[in-house]
Length: 102
Image 1 (spheres, rainbow, N blue to C red):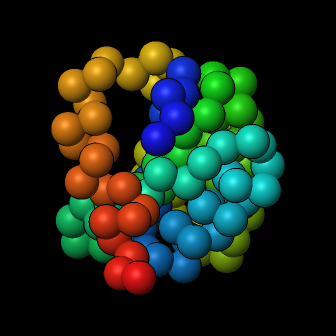
Image 2 (cartoon, rainbow, N blue to C red):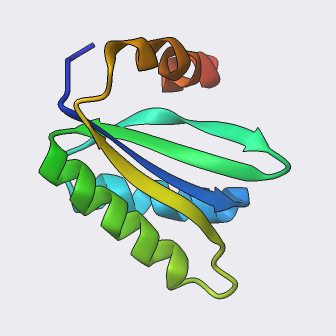
């Protein structure tokens, strides 16, 4: 796995909104879809990695896409530049390869 400078996150309520956010994020910037987390009670967080500028552009695109949908339900979003290495312990659990069986 490549080492990236930033982590971008968009949290929505509902799978359809999460998919729309993920699609917009991946199309808007040179980021890698890291995975998603079904946090609780329907809240889903989409995680992407890339350089800081790409993650900011991707998060902005994801937020805009969800807000543009009828009934779009954005809960939270953020970019973490240079995340602390210990965050990997949490992120690794939600790696896309761990979530989708081959």
